[in-house]
Image (cartoon, rainbow, N blue to C red; front, top):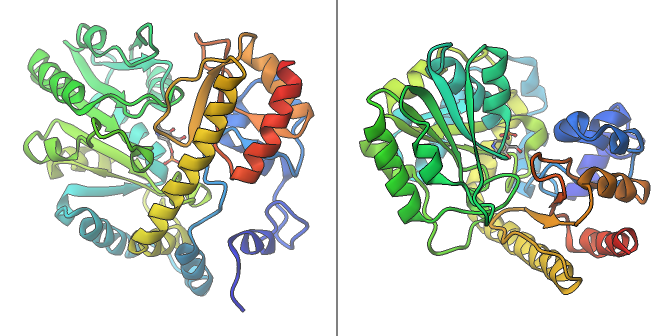
Length: 379
Ligand SMILES: Cc1ncc(COP(=O)(O)O)c(C=O)c1O
């Protein structure tokens, strides 16, 4: 019997009374929610619409669900040998040689091992603020100095100011498109920044995080991937957690020079990516038509949501991702709490943007319900 994406998820007990019940706080909060604004987190319940962690509201892509189903038995075995197959599939899908690819337990693991491999107490991390915070959090835990560069007045990553912090750095983290703003830097800006940053320090390594790459439709944008072919100190990370809908299966990857990836590989947890995640990733890569459908669904619901906020008089950062950042003109934590009381879970606060709320894009039906709540909450 064919399984729909939602019925498969229900059969696993996620979001319903299945046999493998998952503690409610895990699926109600997700990773970001678990760390998020405490007051809003206290009112989280099962069945809420989850617009807080930039996941795919449609679930894993159908090919991945089929692959997971048929690989259940394989879960009895360690998955290490499967990694070569994932890397081969990534190589084919991206026209890259296999030796220039590494995988990780989510791209989060790649961000973490990058800090371990390239930073030290005498080699700082350069990052924006706000941006995705795993590298900065991990650097602090390791006693690595973090230089955080504020966004510019339009909430874009300020590459010129970032450049001033590069000399002596171990790693520069450039998130493009940026989370939590959704803003994308164009190709010319990224190219100029990478060239200048590499020239500013003979050893610095630059990580371009492209977790939201597949959502971008701005023609001025281009991936930094081609640069990694000629420049061993630049590498790119991506993930299966967003457009492919595999966030719960923890699989991400990076493209770069073998020597650069090798330094990170040494820090990875062996067998860190489960069997089901790997078979799902291979299947998902083969279904490029589904990818286009996901892009269309996201764009339609994203325009609907952004238009609703601008029509209501709120400023929305132009987004090239599966979330929008909105100036709600009140503390974002209060807004999140009020929404949570009405079954909608939005993102936590991203200091210093304390009046901006990050709202992940759900299905169109979810966003139609959500804007009713936003209308009531915003008065
Ligand atoms: C910009 C960015 N990078 C990396 C990640 C980590 O994702 P994952 O570890 O699920 O691949 C996220 C997750 O939200 C993100 O927003």
